[in-house]
Amino acid sequence: MKLVAFSRGTSLALPGLLLQDRIVSLAELVPTTRAPQDALCAIIDGFEALKPAIERLAASGERLPLDSVQLRAPMPWPGKILSSTSVCRAERAVSPEPLLMTLKTAECVIGPGDDIELPETLEPWALSPEAELAVVIKGPAKRVTAENWRSAVFGFTCAIDVAARGGPAAMGRDHWVAKSDTLCPLGPCIVTADEVPDPAQLHVRSWLNGQSRQDFSGVTGDYDIGQQIAFITTVMTLNSGDILLLGSSQQDAGELQGGDRAEAEIEGIGRLSVGVRVRAATARGGASR
Image (tube, rainbow, N blue to C red; front, top):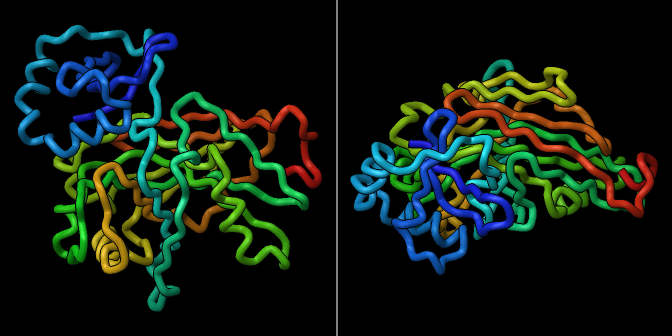
């Protein structure tokens, strides 16, 4: 199944089911007073019990044309976003660097068609839109073994993890700048884990202004999904709706400038496309990049 969050006009985002070029609302399955994030987490937590009702709505519910709604980030307000340092290489590294995770905030999340807003900084900074496979967690998950990783996974979505790189004196602050609002687009949907036999095999691609930038899979990643979830859950509890970004490739994803369009696509999930803008008071280029 492909789950989405969508809105019509100025309405609150609702949970839905994506059926090719149509959307079926799942709002009747969760209390209408719930915020979009809470509604989606309720579907994650109750998915097995809700599955017959979802299948009924898929067969008989009203189907809204995709072009009549606005897709939103399928997980609009994650409690945690963990960004992995694992790298997908041309060939698997024999002795990769130790695995580390950095955290992004919920304010980093935007959805399809939204704009990345380049952060204001006091010195030049390169911001790179790295395509990544993102895991949507089903929790609570603590001390999960590498072999039992599926117990902590609800599904998968596409992410653009905007990385920051400054000069030699910026070491450490790169991670800080990368936590700026809007620097983690997600979408267009969540594909449930039962439809993904091996996430490492999924083909990930990216473009910047229509120019091909990245083309890879997780097969040659430094660390696989099981190792990453096991590593995280030795330290912290993962809860439903948390997001894990599994790492990107060594390929150059390009450098963002105002007016750009960044896109990422993962087979079976779809294409995520976002714009790029600079704050109105900030000039293009120079120290504001």
